[in-house]
Image 1 (spheres, helix red, strand yellow):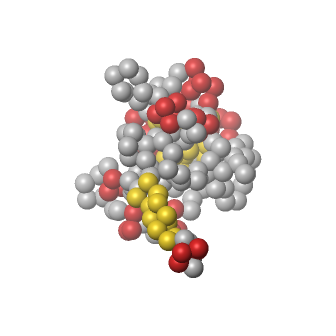
Image 2: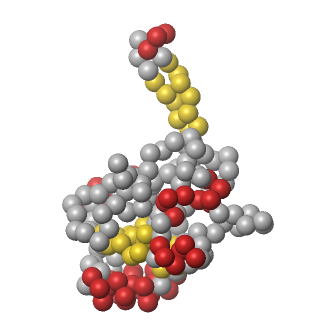
Length: 179
């Protein structure tokens, strides 16, 4: 279906694009043991309908982090309005570099190169990183990529690039295809 396979249709203008992965009990978590847990509560055969119970940590699977996740006093998910969550998005592709260096980050140079090729990043947009890392989601060890000491290694946004996007482009969100 293309769902969760990186960012489907990158390089083309689209309407809405579903970037989610199905949530399963094997979806990688930051810490092993924090994966979703599911059990059958009732069955059609015994109860006339089917129902499951899920236990999940709020930061697993495809999700968004509200400002309150990182900023004391920041708004929580229940305080965000739907119209704030449907925004124009741009995709910065660092997959070639990420294939060679799992600790690579989106840099200001990447953002400037993106703008030279595609035009200015719109104010209020979401800037999404495509690293190709989502292809590893079926293998939790590869997706987490811990070293011998347990430190995780995967691409992300550099602090300088994030500050640049906030201050110079007034973006609304960043997104990654990693933990």
